[in-house]
Every structure is written in structure tokens, then in C-alpha cells.
Image 1 (tube, one colour):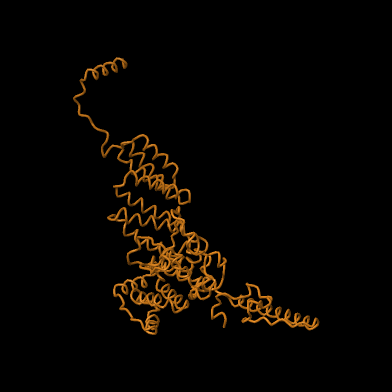
Image 2: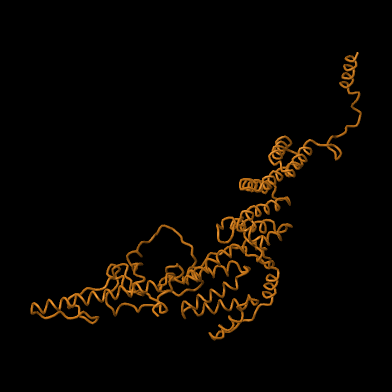
Length: 469
């Protein structure tokens, strides 16, 4: 009986007797759609830390319902699950997923959020300023990308502050390196590092200190760098008027008889605001940072536009302009001093190898250190034809007091050895009845008998006046 009823119903349906009834679509707000069920289940798993189960569910949604309205949200949720795991592998996978989301959905608001999360990934892995800066450099690039690619997004302002925080750590690394060179006495190296900090990171909390130390390096390198010192001090007075070195910088400019520039009111207000809003970790935070290695970014600026373009460090002042590639030999520099970029190419004209002087003789005309023979470089041996030696450039390897003592000791030993040889020669001449050889003096003629000379290493080269004293 039941079977007969079923057959009758099927026949009636086949003839279309029930087609007039209104069709109720299952895709409504009140209907539990399969893709929505899967998405909600995955979100619940992510909230409870079941990341693997959530990713399996989300991949099922993506592969099964390729036209679902939850497709983009599912891809973003997969990236978020990796991001929440937090370990190095999870963060690497999260970056890949976020980059894929930006590639497939560049016009969605979530694309800017994904790029901001990529910035956070590298900030999470940053170390202190005295450690590997690779993650900080990546974070700087990714935060800049948020500002450049999504300028109208709500995440742009947050990305600017993240960029200021990251640049605080990168600047601190360069500043501490420069301070080390300054204490060591390697003035050109210190000046180059300080100059890079002040140009690349003007919002750094210790930029005014870097300017003051850079001016001090110029002062210690000699009077030839007085213009550079005055320019740096003027920059300090003009753009960092809240600095503790303001009065000393003005006093130094007055001593140098240079004009004192007016301070920028906007720069003063910005610097004052940043100083007042610095935050520092407490005792517990500082103790934990020793274990975790996390940097303290509380001193980072809270106002001011972060630098969006990376600059190339300039060539150190210890490198001649011709060697730095800034100007041709004998030409006058028309622009900024050269940068540290080094290019490689195939020379189309090799005549310079035959016509120009040997590069190894560059120091022979200044400090007397001959690294190649004069004749081999086609340079005249006539003293009258030799140009007057120029003042030597500052060096990164100043002579220490210990080295100076060793040099003096070798000179004294060489002088005693020569005196002993002369006494022996005079004694031998008296025994044989011949004339004693003339004593070797600096004014001896070329025809005089050669005498023993001190070794080349015993002659001090470029000994600073301070070290001689």
C-alpha cells in the first residue's frame, strides 16, 4: 500500500501538477548555508586555538564553493590562523598568505590590513639595536609599502607610527657604531656614520647628539673641515632648538665667527612634543628584554613625517675626491661629494692604464710611503719637478701611544747599532793605519760610503701631533 502511494506521488510530480507552488530559495538570511557553516566553524576553531582544524575547514570551503561570498574572508582567515600561531614558521607562512590575498584582492579594504599585518610580522621578530638588523630593515620596507600602496586607508596613520618606531631602532644601531668609532679615535669613520644618521633619520631621539658629535669629529680632524663643522652646528641650532647642546653650539659658532641661524618654531614644537611623550620600560620590562631581546621603542618620535626614501651614505672624508669618484683629477667639485656606491663594468678605453700615474703612488707624494717605484709610474725623480706634498687626509688608524713608544724604541736601537758600527769601523781603520770613514750624516754626499740605515718600519709615518706630545 505504501509503495503504491509513493509511485502515485512520483507520477504526479512527473506530470508537473505540483510545479505551481512557489519555490523557496535556500540562500536566505534565515537559512544555514553550507559555506557559512564551514566559515563559522573555522572561525570558532581559530578563536579556540585549533588552527590546523580551522585551516582544513577553510580549505574545504575554498575548494568546494569557489563562488562563495566567503571566499576572500576564508583566504584572509587562513593567513590570520598562521599569524596567531606566532612561531617563525607560522609567521613566514602568514606573510605568504597575506601577500597572496593582496595579489588576488588588491581593491578590498582587507588588502591594506594584510599589508599592515606583514609589517607587524617583521616587527615581532625585531631584535635590539646591537643585534642583527635584518628584520628591522624588512619591517621598514613593509611599513613604507602600507603608506605608498594604500594612502587613503585607515591603517596608514598606524603604519606611520610603526615606521617611526622601526627607524628609531635602525638609527640607534648606526649611532652606537659611530660613538664606538669616535671613542676609538677613528674620526672619519665616526663622521660618516653620524652624517648618515642625521640625514636618514631626522626624527631619531638622539639626532641632536649625533650632530654635536659629528661637529666634534670635524673639529678634531683639523681646520680644513671648519666649514663642515659650522654647517653641522647651524643645522643643530636651526632644526633642534630644544637640544641640550643648543647653547654650546651657538657659543662654538660665535667662536668661529660664523652667523647663528634662527631656530625653526615648528621644529621646536615637534621636538618638545616628542620629548614629553617618550615612554620607557619599567624595571620588569628591562629585565625581560634581556631574555627576549625585544627592543625598546618608547623613545621613538610621535610627531613628524617619517623618511620614505633611503639614501646612500656619502664617502668618508678620509677618501680623496678622485678616489671616491666624485670629480675628475684636477677638476673642481660642482656638487655633493661622492657616494659609497661601487660599479663594475668593462673598460672601453684602456689608454688610462698607460698615461696616468700608478694609483699606489697616491700616498708617496704626501706621507713618503712608496708602495711602488717612482720610475715605474713615469714620475720624474727631480725634486724640483715633484709637486709640493698636500696635507694628509685624516686616518681611521691613528698612532697610539704604545705604537709611538715602539717606534721610538726601534729608532733608538737603530741609532745605537749605527754608532756601534761606526766605532768598530774607526777602530779597524786605526789598526790598519788607513783613514777612518766619514761619519754618516743626513748631509752626506752620494759618493760617501753607504752606512747601515734604520729599517723602514722604524720611521714614523703620519704621526699626529697629539701622539708625539
